[in-house]
Amino acid sequence: MARNPEKTRQKLLQAAYEEIHAHGFQGMRVDEVLRKTGLQKGAFYHHFSSKVELGYAVLEEQIKPILESIWLAPLKDVKNPLVDLPKILSKLAEKTPESIREHGCPLNNLAQEMASQDKGFQVRTTDLFSNWIQAYTKLFKEGQKNNYVRTDIDAEEIARFLIATLEGCIGIFKTEQSLVQWQACQSQLRVYLRGLQK
Image (cartoon, rainbow, N blue to C red; front, side, top):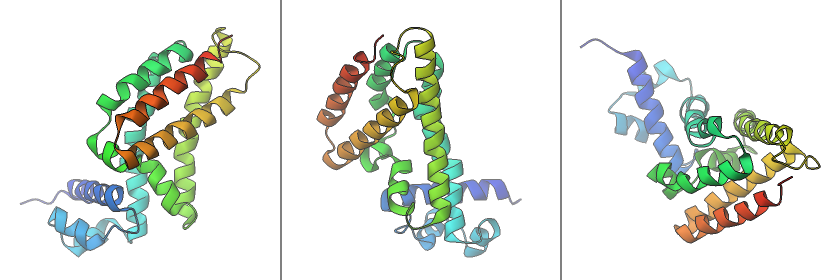
């Protein structure tokens, strides 16, 4: 059978993502990743020089696309963020993978666990959060230009506050495994956004 190096690499990344999401980076074991994929250590070291390099690749190639599909892609249809963002949030539960409902946001989990432990993780998680912040900032600046959003409020501060609030809501939801938390988050974010109307 012909080898397919890219398929092998993707198998390793997917299995590593699942292990990191469920157990954290420090709880992830390369031996378990190999057991799940049916691959040998030689295959692992052909693609990654270390567990840390694998973790970086999981962030960039697994977690980044998830973040973009859940949080950033829906923004392309937003005209008035004060009206359209609550609609996106109301549909989020049905679009969110079961693993995220169970284990929480993989980006925030890794940031909490590893940003203070490893410079590479700190830089990479910061970059992903920065992309999210920039996307929301742009949204609210456009809202200000189009007279939907008050101009006496800093758009980037709004973006940072919303993302911190959402991540906190997801964290408590992960702990409680209760829709009550998500419903409370949605209702109070609507109240907050109404207060930004021009």
